[in-house]
Length: 269
Picture 1 (tube, rainbow, N blue to C red):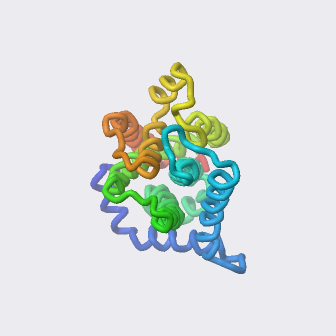
Picture 2 (cartoon, rainbow, N blue to C red):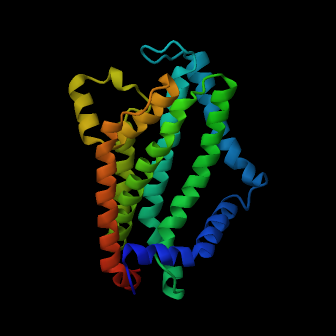
């Protein structure tokens, strides 16, 4: 079996029907037993946006330092939580994707790299629905920036590359060391609070801010989204070089581990 990058791409293309069908089945299965069905994909993010706006903007009147808009903090919060949710979903689900599909791997012959791709596409579908509602909210409240929105594309690519790389490494290791999946859940909780999502980076002490931005690769990514939506600023491209480089290194490591242990993984599951 060939594992070169071109062979992986060709095998994914050959099995595109399997990949797209799996994404569709996952989406339908998620809401199959509920009365409102796919409407929950809209209601959940919509309720989150309304709650944050009503509680933080109207009741608590929370403000971002230097931002006069009454919606500033709720926009800051929604931008951070929605994009962090995409990161956490890709990483946590990719970390468990081989274990969750153990029976499928044992019974069917197909390119195993399809499974992480199904996870990423499924997460992007959920994210697109929630983020679309967020953009609609910004449009209705006249808070939608125009040209800086173009910065979302490269920002999202950096985030996906980093998320997939980290998820792939964790996914392969989790097959052989099940503690990896458990530890990853705890790590993501600490990581969330060590990233300026709920609180502005400006209120963090200087010594802690240096640690957060020097060590935490997600800080400039989340900060880039928040900057676009709160102040209409373009992302700091130089700060994104670190998560991008780290993402490529993790992707290379993940593919190396996958290629080296692909056959052993089936025996271990």
